[in-house]
Length: 265
Image (cartoon, rainbow, N blue to C red; front, side, top):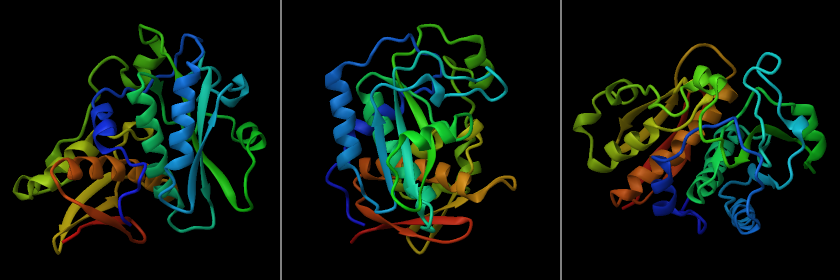
C-alpha cells in the first residue's frame, strides 16, 4: 500500500495531541464549510476497499443511546460520522479503524470534537439510516460538533475528560523500543495516545526483520472490536513514523497479529 493521496500527515499529526474524546456538545451547528471539508475527506480518503466513512450532517438524536439508560449518552451533537465496513472481509475491522481515524483527525484539525463509539449507540437506527451495500456493517460512529466548555460529571467518570488520560508506558506497549530506530519510536509514541474503547489500549508492538508488527492484546473480547482499535493505532503509528522520514507500507496479518509496517527502500 503506497501513501494515499488524501493522507494529510502533518495536519493530522498536529491534531493527535489536541484530540480529546467528548460526549457532551453545546448544540451549535457545525459551519457548512467545515462539514464540506469533512465530507470531502470522507469521500477521498478510501485507502482500502473494505472500509468507508459517511458524514451525517444533521444527526437524529436517536442515533445515540447510553451505556446504561442515559449514562454515557451523547448529548447536543449536531452531526456524526458513521464508520462502515465490509463484514465479509477478514481485514475490515482494522481498515475501518484506520480509515475512520483519518476523518476524525481531519475534524479535530478543524477545531471540532469527536468521540469513537463502538457500543453505546442505536445500531439498528444508524443502519436503517445508511445506504449500505450487501455485506456492509456499521462498526462505529462518532459525534461531531462543539463540546461544552466544561466536561460533564459523566464525561469525567467515563474517561477523565479535560485531564491527561492514563496511558501505558512505551516499554509496556513496545518492549525494548528504547533501542529501536527513531522512526519506530516516534510511531509507537503516536500510537500510544490513540483512542480506544474504554481506554483499554489493546495494542502491542514488536520488531521483526526490520519491520514493526502491531498485535492485539488484552482480555478475551470480540477480536473485531480489538482490531478496530488497532486500526486506529495503525494510523497514529504511521503518522509518527512518517514524521521521522520513514516511508513504508502496511501488510495485513491474521489472528492477533494485525499488521506489519514495512519500511520501503
